[in-house]
Length: 148
Image 1: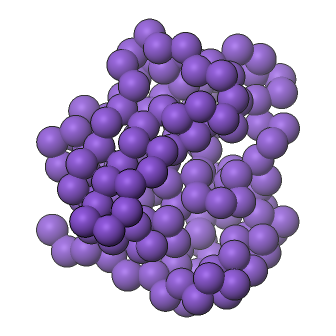
Image 2: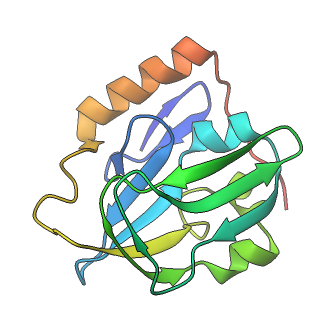
């Protein structure tokens, strides 16, 4: 795991280089979440709305909307696909994302329409980490986590 300004950046994930991470699962689905820098910039999350299972999304459409006291925004998927699972815990307690955005605070699992090209618009490894570190520096982000 890489760390920059207190922001954790797991090297085994794929990133859209703004604020979404993607994790491939063994069954071919892709799990979506938001990055540590994104959860820090949003502030303590108070509300989450996640698309229902069975919803089809085009690339760039929002799989979820998150709200804090100072920010509201969508979580886009970088590929087209069908929502096959959503993290029901986040509907009750969205600030779990502020505690650990990578482990239990995933947002949704999506079955991509085109598995061979689903990750074409995201980066991983050192290329992703370097770009995210530049993003953190550009916006002056100092990551912090909420306590439970």
